[in-house]
Length: 140
Ligand code: CO
Image 1 (tube, helix red, strand yellow):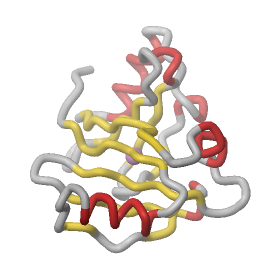
Image 2 (cartoon, rainbow, N blue to C red):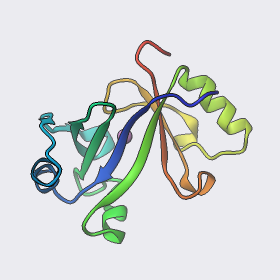
Image 3 (spheres, protein in one colour):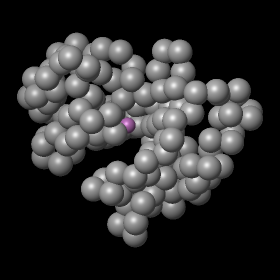
């Protein structure tokens, strides 16, 4: 596999509204999309568009949201994951598993916030960084 474009940086937040205000008022972000719910993943998401990538603001949705634990450890929120594009998500998954990495959900891709399949590599295998890999537009 070969890592591709940086697609987005995932930022967990207790409040998308507060984070949007920060990115808009402190950093001057102008292209902020409408937030939307991903109930099957237990998150509400808002993308901030940058010239070369996005910031993905993630707020917990529901009592069993997977980011409650992260926010318990980081009450103000914080950087949660980094997402890179790969040309073939299944090939990437298979190569990572062959190299001994732990791919979450037993390696089964799911449809991410961009509507394409994604996988996550456990941070213990990636220097403490949770890595999301996403099928690049036009890929598999
Ligand atoms: Co993401």
